[in-house]
Image (cartoon, rainbow, N blue to C red):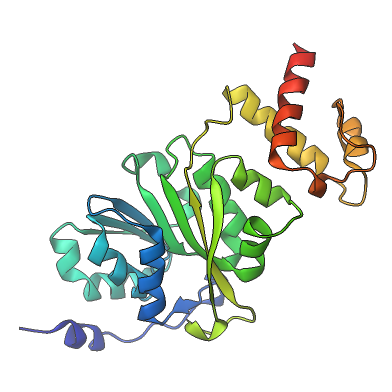
Length: 267
């Protein structure tokens, strides 16, 4: 019988494509730690974006009931089909070829977890796609730029991204991943960022959710201006916001109160 190593070695290696933002995770121990902090249940279905060479996929398959992996690189899809032929055959791995931006998130089973090493250039879009989807993941555990993870989970200053994430769940900086763990090596270190307790519980309605983001985008429109001025420019009342506060100084709770106040005043 052909072993996994023999099956894998018979396939030519695939070179990372800069156009797809590929930085392959090469360390199995790091992949194992990512799966550990993701706290995947035995009966869970995991969605993985960009499995690459399969380092993280292999560890996910040890824990999850099923892994649905979406890969944009056709060459990699062929290699993964070869390397994981047994797991595909028994139904534990579903390997799809396509771009996450065109993927139907609603087709995923309810309560799925998202675990992935994502391309840096798609970070904001992936957060938006999954957190605002009707079929939200139960949790997200993502490898992102260290700076992004720090800004979202550790910084005392808020950002458009950090508030957009905190509106739906609780982000946590899990651990740092050195740039040497990837091939090709990126210019900066990465970090694992997890988001737990994902829901729309903060919003009373879809209209409130939409108003929240309208206010947020208006408030951060000009970072050097005071938030009162930014909101006024967009036609919103600033309520009792401190006169010289900037958007980054306001915590999520203030934005939520402001959202409800503007809806009340416009009704």
